[in-house]
Length: 241
Image (cartoon, rainbow, N blue to C red; front, side):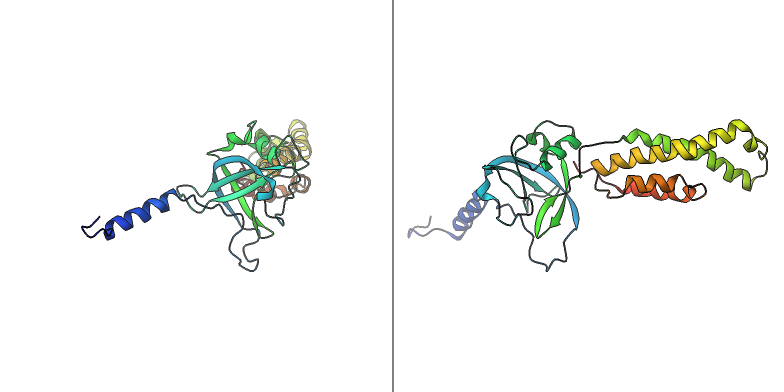
């Protein structure tokens, strides 16, 4: 304070800075209007806070209807940032028909929404709002089926190598090898692809069809091309929680 009773510029700026720090950051549920150009885009954010709020806090046109008296508000930020704060809304897992939160908890392997704090979720823009990417159902299939994919493709790979390098041609004509090739090509490979793809479909943002990939994998000759394409798609899939 100066002698004539007026605050110095430094004091005013200090007061304004403290007020700005005390003012809570307002979470945003909807991105700026971009005429739908961002619809469907995805990005990853980290859960910072989970709390129950009155359902009246949820925008009336929010894409997932909240029919319960309270809603679970999940606030997130992009990693290593404090702003902006994104907010998602869910019905509590023990009330209402909306099971999106229950499916996310099942993928994450946790029992409560609070245990999602510090975990990454995949967000997308749906109907003009930020929304979580949530699989269609409970986790199914198994990630360990990927080993069966390699085992199922091995006999076909051997045949391909023999076609290039003549030695071994007699071996692939033996009954044990032919039986093994039939079992691997028409049973092990498509079944492994199906179980692995089912796991991807219910735990990641991958949207392929397990049955379609399994059928294509059972086609001799084509599977040499199909399986690598599938494995590339598998590698690019991101866990939703």
